[in-house]
Each structure stands twice: as structure tokens, then as C-alpha cells.
Length: 463
Ligand SMILES: C[S@@+](CC[C@H](N)C(=O)[O-])C[C@H]1O[C@@H](n2cnc3c(N)ncnc32)[C@H](O)[C@@H]1O
Image (cartoon, rainbow, N blue to C red; front, side):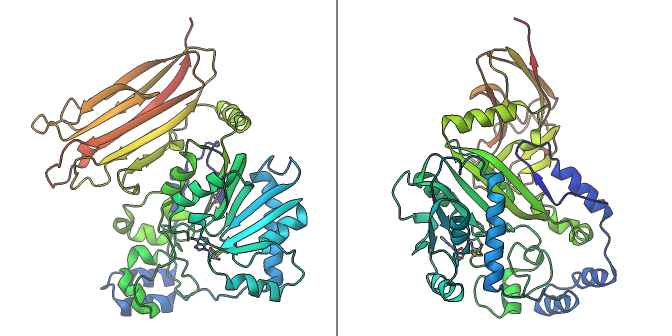
């Protein structure tokens, strides 16, 4: 069985859930893996972890030779044309690399483009080693500082980029804000990073600890004891989920996400298959994510026009392209099913919903202006219990207008809805949300806290 290792998930019709189910079905533990599964049935203490790690040894880490790093930087720069289309067309470009580390990227960029490059990283000592080890590199300016507080004024750069650093930044949202601030209008931010935290090697410990998903299987204290460290064994990783990153890049109204690609690794699903309950909270792509590559353009008219044209060319409506968010930013429990033709959401705290808790699903649907249309869809919450009104309600909004609100205590039948879309619209913004209206009884609200959307169609109507 062959599954793609990476997919462009922004304008393609990618159903990661389907690929995941296929991979899970085919997953089969070998002899050693069966022994690991057996060990995981014991008390999960440090002795168990040691025994498991003897069976699955850590990958030998070979530190990069400076030359290899220079070559890697050239290879990375070679890929930029595709992801940052148009950025280098306008002659000399100002580039900022955040989390630049040693700085080979800056040199490779200057080698290839007419570029003025600056690197930013809090660990100044890296810069010095770099210069000693590789004197042939172009001399770029590197300064000490944090990406959450970029020490430059507004509208300074044509490109802000970062490699393998987004998962380390303490506050990625603040980094995007700052990148946006220092970008010129129409400038691009580009990040390639991973693995995000929920993936098999999300804690970046594979050179010390071979067990994939160790962070989902053992308590952090046990991992810390095994590693011989005090405190958080995952220090330096921000713990962001893939869903949260997707949302960060594709939901920011100030930027247009023009390129978005996820890389997957399918090799470790034998563990997920063997211990399904332990991974029940994590939906794909969280469990197979290896890296994310993304470009966002600071809103300029040209970028927006290009983006809308591209989205318009899409056939059908892909519900999995929607974005989910919740009151606390955690979305792993909030997505029920994530397929192209059916999407379900749930309160992420459904055992104890508190007033103000919410899960929101939003989707932008491109349309052709000049043509009146009808948006038809089905929304379904299967719970019905008239004894419990006023706890949880769901609302559907189209282009910010409320179309339908229903209390979960009401009729559990599916709602077929049709909404007229004005001929002038070039996008339809669909929003479905679940809200806890009060602190609910602390029991499992199961179906009461779920709502599904499907059969979404946008059809032209005759005037
Ligand atoms: C895994 S290294 C990647 C280095 C380099 N970009 C590469 O691809 O080889 C992550 C880098 O991010 C830097 N970093 C961590 N937190 C940062 C922050 N808040 N702001 C800027 N850089 C940060 C680290 O010092 C480190 O150099």
C-alpha cells in the first residue's frame, strides 16, 4: 500500500482521514513491536520505559558537518521559488530569518538572489561558531533577539522566513503578528517546520528515546526520569497541535495563505491500532504529522485576487478545508470527523461544559460574483431531551448572519437549510458553532455536545 508522504492541503481535495484509516487498517506490528505492546500493558513506570527503549533503541544522532548544512541550505533555497511565487520577481529583496541558528540559510539566499539578509536568534553563540567553521559563507547580519519581539520597524521586509523553529517558539501567534508587522504589504512569511507536538516524534527526542508517541503513552515525569532531567522533558517545544497551526495560518484575515503543505509519516500506526483508547482524543493528521510548510502573504490586492481565483477553480465544497477553534484553543477533542463531505464538531470539554465554552467551525467557500446562488446544506444534532433546555445550543451563520439556532434539547431531526447568496458575493463565509449557555451538570454530554454538517452545495439560481 502506498500513501502519499505529503499533501498540499489548502486547495487540493485531501482527505487525510481517509488515508489515515487506510494506513491504520494495514498496520501490523512485527515481533519486536508485539513485545513493546505487551510491555505497555504493565504499569507505565520508568522500568517499563527502559525495557521498551531497549527494544526500540534511539536513532543514532549524527551532528551535521558544516558543509552538509551549507548544502542543505542551498537545497532549501532551491525550493523557495515554488512556495514563495513572485516574491523574488521585484529585484532586490529584504529578508529576515527568524530562529536562524548558525545562519547558512542567509548565506545561501545571498548566493542565489539579490538579497539583503538579516538573521535573528536568541542564541548568539551559534553565529560565532558558524563563522569560524565556514568562512566561505556570505556575511549576513545576525542579531540576538526573539521572534516574538522582532527588533525592526514596520514594513521593512519582503520575506520573513523560518526553518524548524516555529515548533520551538514560545508563542507562534505573537511571531506571526510580529512577522506581519515587519513585512511590507504584499510581502510573504514562509515557515517550514516540524514535527508538530502531537506527531510520533513531536517532542524531538528520537535521538535519545526511540519509542514513537512516548509523550502520549508515558507521564512527563517518567520521561524526565528516564532522560535524567529535572522538570519538563519537552521544554523548548510549544506543544501546538497541527490543527492549531492550520488555524493560525489559514484563519488570519490580515494574510492570504497561498501555500500550505503537510508531510506525514505512516510508520507508527501499529501502536495506535494496538492501543486505540490511548489515542482516541487525537484525530488525523495529528498522529501522522511530520512537518508543515506554509506561505502567507500580507494582504495586498494582487495576492488576494490570485487566491480567490485559485479557490474558485476548486470543484465541489471540501468540508475538511474548514477550520475549528475552541474557547481555549485546544481542538484535538473538538473534531469528530473530518471528511470532504461530512464534518462533525463537539465541545472539547463535553464531560463538564462551562458557560462560555464553544467550538466553532468555519469555512470559506469561493463563488463567482455576478451570479445569484443558493447554498444548501444539512445540519444535524441527534440529541433530544426536553428536560435539559438552556444547556447547549448550536448556531449556523452565513456571511455573519444567523441562519438557524437550535437548543440541543429540541427536536433531534436533521435540518435541511437553504440560504440565498447575493450575486455580488465572491466568498461565502460559513460558520457553525456549539455554545455552552451555562455551567452544565458534570456528566458526559455525549451526543448532546455534537453537531454534524454535510451535503453542502452551492448552486446557481436563475434570476
Ligand atoms: C531547531 S533550531 C533550527 C535552526 C535553523 N533554522 C535550522 O533550520 O537549522 C531552532 C532555532 O530556533 C531558535 N529559537 C528558539 N526560540 C526562539 C525564539 N523565541 N525566537 C527566535 N529564535 C528562537 C533556537 O535558538 C534555534 O537556533
